[in-house]
Length: 161
Image 1: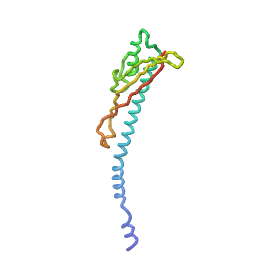
Image 2 (image 1 turned 180 degrees about the vertical axis):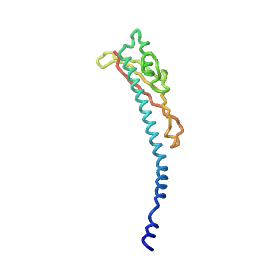
Image 3 (image 1 turned 135 degrees about the vertical axis):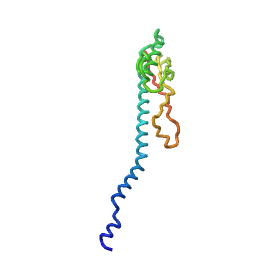
Image 4 (image 1 turned 90 degrees about the vertical axis):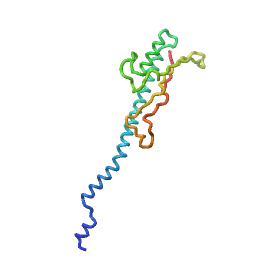
């Protein structure tokens, strides 16, 4: 066998190489897209969770500046609910997170005695039952048909004056 015949017998054709690369790319592209969408969706979930944590903290900070026995305390609790849901005290504008309602916001005040015998007023503001819905649920590829996740209770406790 001459040298040219041996070279053609074992060297792949450029058209066949390009076709193999296209097939390999198509096979790898599916999991890469699923991973990218999954990372984006979980990033969005973390962003909304962080928004709720900051909203609860702001509402707690508002109530910590007012004593629970004050005359306008009911007004302050209503403003704190608006602050937790809308980001302002007059309940205007869109919710900070989609699906967040004032009914999800809990506000409780308590009084305790310190070891020195002084009274300490505490206020606890929380959001319970918030459900985050995926736009593209990456978990459906693993057999999960649920379209979202429900966050656990998000709460803060602060000392009142």
